[in-house]
Length: 338
Image (cartoon, rainbow, N blue to C red; front, side, top):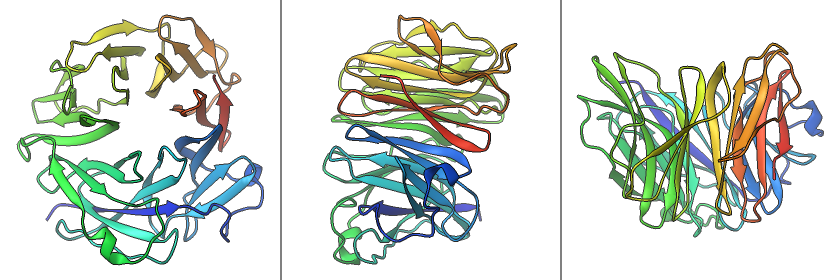
């Protein structure tokens, strides 16, 4: 029996609810694990790795604790109205099943099971969309309606819609490296692995057919995905340099190597008002840091120079604001880019 990851979700509608979180955002220590924009404000999801609620939602000076014991791999998304959804994985044994429970507004809802970390997005109608490898090793999409709406009972969470984006498992093992939503359907940045070859490709309606990266053997090929109705963007690392691949839905990839070297971890990407932003962490003689670039523009430093700077996240809001978040000195840092 494979190791199965149960994906659980909380709809954080009332951020001012009583929690065990510190009173000050500056007191929160941990790694940044998620970033979203609600209105004109950025919200960070911080993984503290401690306590019965190991994750913190940090919005300005307000801190809210979410999660459950032994939860891991958290994710964060916001719908068009600015309602937040946080998801996480909880290891357990068993087959693939879906269940739910509600504890009033903001209660935890069990969404089902898979065999790898979940990727999360929120539709404009408040539905949560999850992408993760299923028991066969394929990419499965689960749509949970009404997550950001008031919870009235378990019944409304039994009508889960689940379908596959790939059908080559278990001969090919799939991992969801990124998720983006379009009206035509979800797009997933898919890491495909066999003993002989690993490939990073985009799957879903409108995805370019060519692979972004290919390597011999079992390799961890990561990246970041963003998409609008008219543009798809993927950022990844090749030979220590950040690469931005863009395409129109149904069209071919156009690749551009960005001006950075010694990149550590995966880069981040966001699209707003027709502009593509890319951010990455890299080693430099000054001790490294986070850098960002707009497609076709120059590179600029986002973080102060220093050692121990983790890979960044990017998020764009409907207002056009773009924020970057990263971990440095044991805390989740934040900066507005636009």
